[in-house]
Image (cartoon, rainbow, N blue to C red):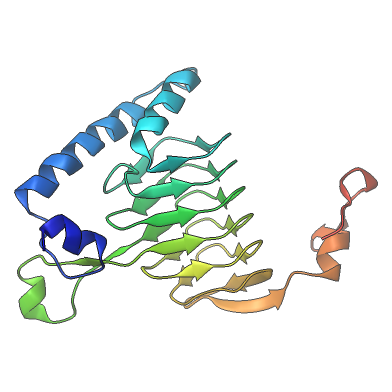
Length: 206
């Protein structure tokens, strides 16, 4: 089995393999170009994103600076994904992001881990476990999502949370480690923040 196959199959592998580093370097060159674009160069950004990502849906926007181990090479974006400043994707493994997902500033999504055994870490070995984020999810500022986690549709992850386990759909989850606080429901149909009511123009059914 090749190093690349081990990398893609969640097995322990050597990330310093020369062939991997050569491929990774090409991806990082595109990432550098993306982060060097001017705010007015929206068309150029979009053309670069088409080259950078494994899949790119319609209407996606990522605010530079954007960081990714493989420049987005193993990231699958749905439609209408929005990411604010300083999104970090440790995309050595696959990251699947659904439609209308929103990332607040300084979010980290990691797929890569290292063995606990010191003798293996001395060799710089690692493994990758995919992350899956459903549709219409909002990830709050400074949140961290660790390898292997799945987040269900419509859920909200509170700012500063560390998501170490799967989060179901239609909930608000917060904390370190991140836990379900409550379901999204009737209160959220009436109020958008504390006691501030949603006006008629934007009132919809959940």
